[in-house]
Length: 147
Image (cartoon, rainbow, N blue to C red; front, side, top):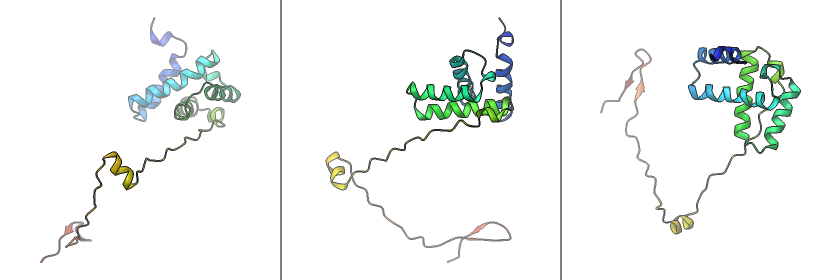
């Protein structure tokens, strides 16, 4: 069976064309297509028939299923592209909001903990700059001072 005769194929091709025109990376295109497939599977029908309430229920389904915030945000971004650009219906997706992604603090060791872990401490040495270049306004070139 040819891909153009499958249900949803014209929408998929339109979306792929829109992403190609914008020179999206292949990985981004795959992620956006996957983002549109998810609510289609959840709803059991074509994603272009989804309503604002359907998308709200879908987002709640993702949260209840334990989907991580980064995955939820990537899905919302793909759906926003689909509804806004491919379909020209930004009002359908307008109420979906990205979720907060908690940031992790970097691990910072005290000097004592670093010694225990066997991590060598390094010292920063500042070297003074003896000469500073100037920029010529007429030629836009760097000129080093003569000694």
